[in-house]
Length: 276
Image (cartoon, rainbow, N blue to C red; front, side, top):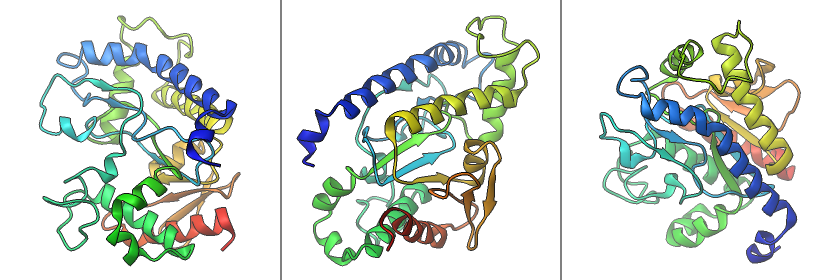
């Protein structure tokens, strides 16, 4: 189906409206964090739900745990973080994000950010498993981006930016006892920090399985697949993981240099989606 035809399908329009509703669910939390980041919620580093474009039924849905610091334009900010809602160009392909003083396809240049660089390796591996000549891709990189952007989506399981997962959990603990936060219908009086996380996981799972309907899901990090599957997952070989319930949900251990694992995940996705 051509891109213009896809944009006009009922499924795609429903996806867009559902994403609007999802971000409305997040707004009371963002309001609380943005207004009080200089006082109580000093961990807050901005908010990003979607990194890229909305795509219905993509080959690969990539899920990160949470953004470290909003989009990269906020890297140098010490305070005053904001929320970046809605669609935007994929940051993995933005200049100087993956490669130091260079474009993402200039693989001879030093990496400056392992996350986008390894996601690109995953996508290359996926395409190679389907018979794509990556050498040819590097000769026409913009044409390949136009092609691959229609096959992927990138989401954050939790859209609240912090330096790391422990800070995110610390922020949620503070939120439970915050008298300024009144939008708490989702929680019981005895709720725990994990109850808060489970609420957000359910929001994301409902959105993904009802409206996105991806052909495969790649959870970036052990914490991501653990939370996304409510702890129902098991280890495969080579630092990869798999959901107990759905074999099309896999995870990657992101500790250390995880380039090899990213490549293996790309091959695994090709097997899952196309039975190669």
